[in-house]
Image (cartoon, rainbow, N blue to C red; front, side, top):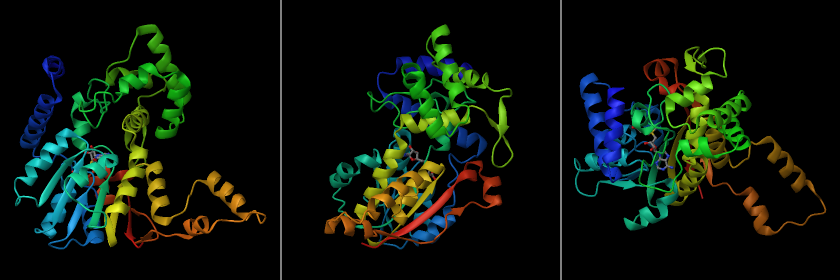
Length: 370
Ligand SMILES: C[S@@+](CC[C@H](N)C(=O)[O-])C[C@H]1O[C@@H](n2cnc3c(N)ncnc32)[C@H](O)[C@@H]1O
């Protein structure tokens, strides 16, 4: 609590996000130093290396630098590889700049921004389409983001209801508090149901709106977690590893995905991966949510696995009275990626015990063929 109060006054005094970045970084380093716990344990790092097979002199992109776990693995295998490392989070970007300073000038290129900013960011560094040998995505939020209560991702550590991966650098971006306090019950229900796959979405959205009317705005993570817990008979339920998970976990995930526009960003990111990889270049994607995996699968396998859409596509193209334009048929048959394995790779039991974040990880990979 003392830290939270101290932090609040610190944030109030801050005129710009840069000081907050420095504060969070100092906290990250001191946590790491005191407990010797790494900032973030990279998930399935050896499998990613197996896919990319990094070679000195080649160019790789880490789309989600975080604390740099996958980048460091690539550089440990190919110390002369060129790394372009992107993250939307200013804290992660500072870490990337730090890493870059340990390598020869221009070998590690840190970029601050989102997947959707890549055309501008890459052209500012003269990175041409078709010039990259391998790309890795490790989606979702980092442990650093969860561990820092002031970022507002955590439901166990109380903090302002924020959840913006970009921190304060995009002032117009809504926070989780804006979403929770400004949307109507129907919209909240849609978000919690769709992005959280939460069966109790109706009850939760109702409880949020009721609390808002009775007590005013919801501003803290703990406050929201308590409101959600009030809907359930117990604070915890079992996750897929039969461990206790807080009942608010899925709602928090839903809000995070919405606030950061994560699914649209992923779609954009995969388009960018295709544009910047050379033919024969490889892409590895670690996802942690069924909707993310569905998007990755749709890109790599060239099929839409959404049942409704498949049905309507089938009926649409079955119509014998319709004449198709050549481009339409070519587009339908076009294969841009060749998946490197038919099935998705999941983590082993040992991986999951070592790194709880790995429990829902799914790894897919593909080679650009067109
Ligand atoms: C799971 S962490 C990556 C951890 C990293 N692989 C490691 O081993 O340290 C995901 C990171 O991706 C970043 N991120 C998520 N979506 C992004 C996007 N659309 N554009 C850029 N960065 C993004 C987040 O800010 C976060 O730092």
